[in-house]
Length: 205
Ligand code: TMP
Image (tube, rainbow, N blue to C red):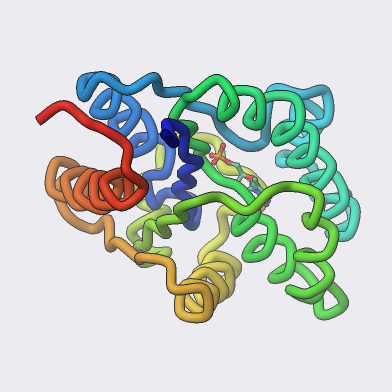
C-alpha cells in the first residue's frame, strides 16, 4: 500500500511557505506518519551557491534559472526520491513553481516553457499548494530582515500573478495567508488530509 507522498508549499516571499511547511510537518508527525521536511534552495553545493546569489544583482536571470533547475534535479535525485522510497511523506518548502514564477518574471526572454523544460528531470509533486498574499503585506512581514534581490513590490506583483495563473491552469489550491496562522494552517491540514485519504494512506484520528 502507498505510504509516501510528495507535497510542496509554494508562493511569493512572505507568504509563509517556511512557517507553514514546519507546522504541517509537525502535524503529520503527530498523526503517526514518517515525515521529511526539506526546502529549496536545497543543501546541495549548488543550493549553497544560490543562497549567495540571492544577494547578488549581477547574476544573469538565465544563470539563476539554470542553477535552480540543477539544484532541483540534485535535490530530487539525491534526497527526495530516496525518502519517498523509504515511505516518508516529503514536504518541500518551494519547488518547480518557484522557478516558473520567479525566473520567468525576470526577463522577456525567459519563458515559462523554457523553465519547465529545464526542470523536466525533476519529478512532479503529488500535491502543490500555493500560499498567496498581497505583496505589500508580504513585505511588511519581512520589514526587519535583510531582503533578497527578489523582494521588491513590483517584482513580487509579477511573480504573484504567474503563481495565480499557474494555479488556475494546473488546478492547484490557492490559500490566502492574510489571516491568523492557525486558521491558514488548518486549511492546509484539511487539504493534505483529504489527499492522504484519497491516496489510501492511513492516518491517526
Ligand atoms: P526563502 O528561503 O526565503 O524561501 O527564499 C528563497 C528565495 O529564492 C525566494 O526569493 C525565491 C527564490 N527562488 C527562486 O527565485 N527560484 C527558485 O526556483 C527557488 C526555489 C527559489
